[in-house]
Length: 267
Image 1 (cartoon, rainbow, N blue to C red):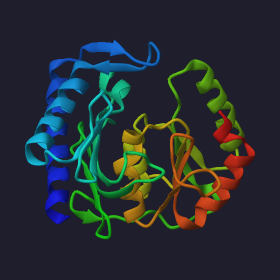
Image 2: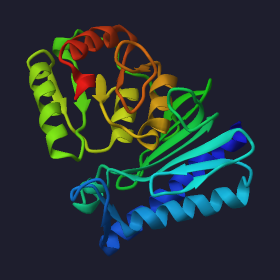
Image 3: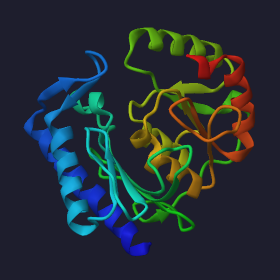
Image 4: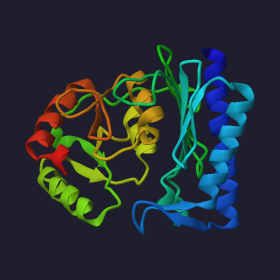
């Protein structure tokens, strides 16, 4: 696994370098997906092609699931889950919070059943490299990281995100309004992968969101878990597109209860 982990990290670094180069050259919107604000850039597609080509050359028997449409059924039992640029809107606006996220999982590419083995999230703008190997801990630029010590909810800094559909965002805003007076403050970074890594390194005490895709959470969730945090769905089940909550063990239950009471999973 160490050799495979090195490949995961190396690919994420190379892909992030390409994304940063293309950002400096200027960004072209290639298409919209679920709505007019859910954009994909030419760089998203180019970065995914780079990563997929490298994987197929090195690991032809593995499966691949990429945000920009790559779907390869492998025979090895391992699947690469790729988000070529997580935080594409940030990328488009040149906000320095976008990342390449690559994970290697065992089993089907389903967060409720897979077993994540290795993950890397590289901030393309800053070069920060978050990584985790199952059983081997989590690191930022080679240094071990841990989630922050558990605090009471009223002094917790909580991250979240919103969907692209306007009606869903309004409902998510209502949930946030119900939570805002009960925590220290809220941050909305715009990249789920980085938000998860910020929980892992203590920059956030917790992060929650409904509507994430497998590629949004695969690597970042493993980084949180290997940093000593908990990643779960509402009520303690596995995280999924239905809901994800990440926090220190001593904080997650209180936030889970409050978010459940607010109906955060019914948005």
